[in-house]
Image (cartoon, rainbow, N blue to C red; front, side, top):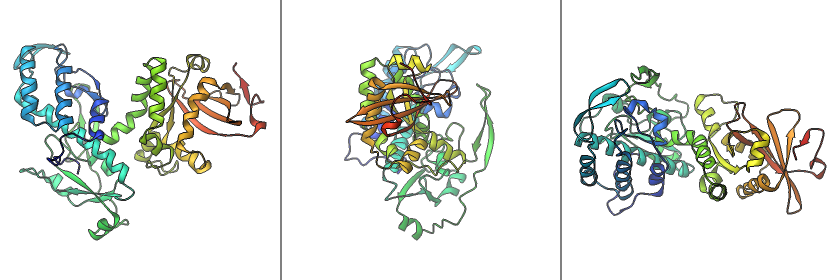
Length: 411
């Protein structure tokens, strides 16, 4: 279920739910429209909180109710006295981007909105992670009837839609699909999907969009009919799409030892194993649909370059990323390389020999003898030098090891 309340016998939220919220950075804003939907997946923000020193308080209270299945009443009891004491309550004249204006700060209605939006997106993201993990046995989702008293006509029209977990439809129509939306999905088996009438030959629902202009930023976007502006993204899927830049920025900011430990944790985690084993959705480079291209771009850190290597290749980041597309390519050519082997890329970055590919100018080679076997890792740096990708990682022949006409030493 995407938005169902938990079973009352459980008193703590699953790790997937709290992890989504914990990983969000803090981003003050004056208006909710200042923060794009994809930024909400990696940022915790409250409109008109800038300048009041209340964002951390609101974040803490929100985290508590998410982790402990707290009620709205408990959320208010914890937060209202703090916000009143700090002056973030009621209607006040404050200075905004367009000068002074009278705005609504804290109120019971505002707190209900904050509670509902954050609790439900965290749960939706956590459920999406679980759906991805179990989709081999339960590969379909069915859109189910909302439990809300007043059901939106468009949402009622989606009830009964059955599509594969990775169908692009769920990138925009995975609940919640608007403010206070109580729609839900259920993950089902292929047998149940077929019993309920699913036919793979039948085209999926046509997504009709309408233009919406953000009056604060001026940005004009297409929003699917029936979905409130700002809710046209799947928080779990959006989080994956932003993961490579989100993690890179934070790893780069860590001290050297902390970066090394973080990389060890990341390459040993379930998500990286799934990436390295080709378990994440991607239908190959020939499929140029936006949804598939975005799935291929999803990437996770695999190594952190030492300062001297970063300087030699002229990169603006130390983090080496491994994309879903490159992982799938690796598997098709080098199935014998297991996920745990990728921990060696960090060792090669720290202790290996560095070469420049004379034929490209954008690729660099790390080589090292490990357990008496020659290994190579090929790194590609993007044109803006802000991202580095692991393009290939493999054992090589001794004749390919060391300086060649193509591999120019950078010692």
